[in-house]
Amino acid sequence: MKLHAAITVLRPRDEVQRLWQDPALHPRYLDEIDARVTFDPAPGDRGTEIHVTLEHDAPGGKVGKAVAKVRGAMPRAKAMDELRRFKQRVETGVIVRSDGSPEGERAERKLDQRPAQPLHENELAEAGAS
Amino acid sequence: MRANVWSGRNTVQVENVPDPKILNDRDAIVKITSTAICGSDLHLYDGYVPTMERGDILGHEFMGEVVEVGKGVGKLHVGDRVVVPFPIACGDCWACRHELYSVCENSNPNAGMAEKMFGHSTAGIFGYSHLTGGYAGGQAEYARVPFADVGPIKIEDDLPDEQVLFLSDIFPTGYMGAEFCEIQGGEVIAVFGAGPVGQFAIASAVMLGAERIIAIDQYAYRLDMARNKAGATDVINFAEDPDIVEQLKELTGGRGPDAVIDAVGMEAAHGHGVVHAVDRVKQAARSESDRGHALRDAILACRPGGIVSVIGVYGGLLDKFPSGAFMNKGLTMKSGQCHVQRYLAPLYEHIRNGDIDPSFVVTHRLPLGEAPNGYETFKHKQDECVKVVLKP
Ligand SMILES: NC(=O)c1ccc[n+]([C@@H]2O[C@H](COP(=O)([O-])OP(=O)(O)OC[C@H]3O[C@@H](n4cnc5c(N)ncnc54)[C@H](O)[C@@H]3O)[C@@H](O)[C@H]2O)c1
Ligand SMILES: [Zn+2]
Ligand SMILES: [Zn+2]
Image (tube, rainbow over all chains, first blue to last red; front, side, top):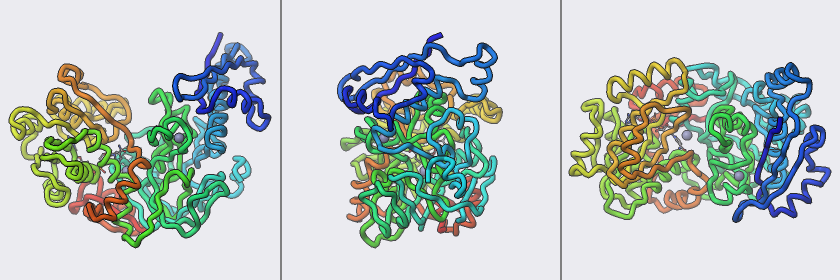
């Protein structure tokens, strides 16, 4: 089964491709799941489209798939997380964090939001935000 | 610090919570001096917006003093007095570069959630559910403000808080609603809802040169404010006569208003019997139905070829959308959470010039600790309430 994930980053294609290879920015999860990645210029002033094709979705057959789905850990959702983080870091220089999602966009957080109130000291380091 | 948190339908309470911290380089921390309750907060309070969690700090209309800045913040300094816009916007994405701040592509770290609801993610918003990011809000002593260089506007003169606070939301929102109407001079504009947002839509339509402005509400005291303070030329009280569309035709020689502004949103009252009953039942059953009387009447009343400006907030799906009237009359609809950042500088200038004093909407001033009373008073329109300002 083929799954597709895509995002558009507001930078020229050569720059996006170069930053994609930068070890500090490179989305490693996409290597782990053996995704195919292509870069296309977007029309007009819209930047560069990154297209990701996932060759297989959840490992572990039907049961694994169901488990992964329930836990919100579907590879496509995680691939989108990685694409969003890449876009955020390229465009804004930071990972966007909230009180509800202090680690930034994460599929696993969708069903497990913190309340929207500031973190305790011990949670800060855990979220990678201190 | 102390903060006003959501703790279930129709319940908010002021609690002790941790102080906010800088989470990344582009953040600032603001010590809040004034914060307000908005009609949008009522949608959360009433339980019509999904993805609320117990303990969520509410509030998206606030101002105060910068007390800490991250390493990547250049324009703001400790000690600056700022008003903070309610949408969080990065300033760097395609949407922000095109001044579409409320649909910033980067500021919502729960974009995946929003995509499921709306097809796409929209900007993060302070204190406004997890669908718009899960950000702690500003009905508190302090708030963390992400992308601090992009949103907050510095207030350099000694205007009191109440004159500039509403730059955070309702003044720009009302202004955007009026701007959508493409006023050239000579128009008749109908404004549904004479709450704080409607008041600023009316005042803005006056500033933009509309000739007649008709305010519509069910509360006489709000219509009095619309006429005496905001500048409405006519009013319709639908508690007295529910046929708003017919009254609008009468007031416009049968033509209908050139543009109509919906400043009511998903909890509209009244409407005509059967449809209203259906809406109520579906909303009570939480089957994601918005109550659409104002929007339906707005579409039916608007003159052919006119503009329908929707700044009242909707959340889910709407039944009985008058698509026939909308299409056959050739109407244009424009909408959105306000792109506040776009309007800050020009509207601040209007306030400084004395063209408008936005504090006219304030009816209630309470300490933060009394936020729960404030919500009840505002929700039930008790004690002639129009706008509540809280003091932390
Ligand atoms: N687009 C934005 O960026 C933005 C920003 C702020 C607020 N809002 C929205 O604007 C709306 C109004 O906010 P507010 O603070 O003025 O709230 P509010 O509750 O004080 O005002 C709403 C008014 O509408 C009136 N009303 C109810 N049903 C009506 C109907 N069928 N026809 C005409 N009037 C009717 C009510 O009597 C009330 O006076 C809300 O939906 C709020 O969420 C949008
Ligand atoms: Zn508001
Ligand atoms: Zn942006």
